Length: 282
Image (cartoon, rainbow, N blue to C red):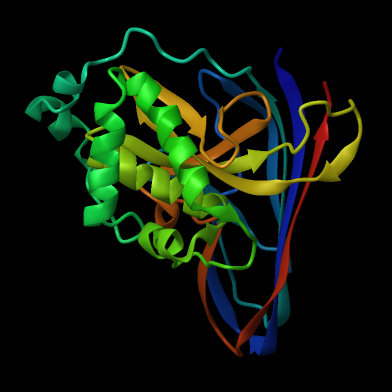
């Protein structure tokens, strides 16, 4: 059954001395696609600023703004209403392992099979990917198996990693958050020749959510694997991406999809934190 979800996302910063100018990009507006429809979306800033929108190389809608009035705090709030779809069935008619390693396919998806700074190659992870692939005749079975492997190696523990932590560093520490689970899954999928991309968005925390109840949600990350078509899978929770997932952005890794990015002239900044409130409307 489809859901209708309202999301309110607020990010704030405080500065040690007045900022005289800043230039910012925000990626918090959910996408509209074949499995998701964005019904309403807005981004508001305090201090107020004129905003404009564009789509980046990866197909993400970006809200950009700059401020030239001195300020000591900046708060960016996004509000959206999205209709989501149930998780699709695991693909059945998928390319074989031999087809996935065909040069023309690798060339088509080159950006999603190559390592990145956040998803680097590592000989032990390459060996693990090959072992998992050899144990599964279909790439469609391999993807959930990667999720199982990642959850065996990582314990979910907020505050133990940061946005610059690579998949290898999180794996070596044995702890991480959804970003690290997604990055580590991408390393294994790409090492086995499965094109895979990073997805950022939101997740409603309860499958039994009451209509009209507002709860604390979270920014979330998962992956999409190309199995003849893109299929979303959440390695942190071990489930396909479904009605509780709200997609905002896709890319090679986190650094293609940061929720907020900017430069400014002024004093050092302190984060006021990020809050996400989600409400199931239907």
